[in-house]
Image (cartoon, rainbow, N blue to C red; front, side):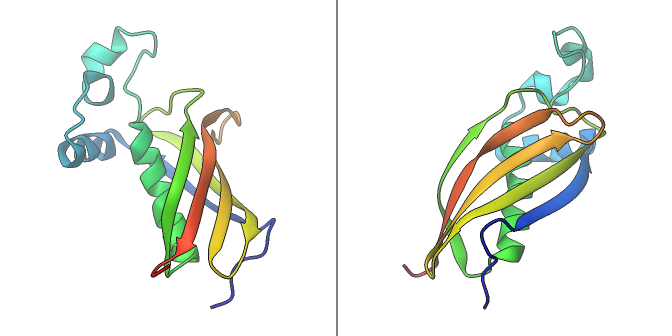
Length: 131
């Protein structure tokens, strides 16, 4: 398998729905009302439900696994500078920063398509499985 070169950007546009938030809450057990209760979240400073941070990261995980089969995650750092709302189109982008035979470093970023605001930023380290 040929690994992507540094500077390669893996990207995906996706709109998460309230149903996605609800399913993730059921699977993860994180049923915080800010994610699943429109009435409750409507009374918060956000004004509506917001995505689980790890739901955003799982979309990345799928994107990266398709591009780097045979690799597993060794570490990650994430920040969530702004909320991601249900039914809001997002771009998920992972930029390859470093590549060796056994590891890949990625810069990750989720942005709102409408305005470019970052809702998730971070880094991930991938290593070849079996290593």
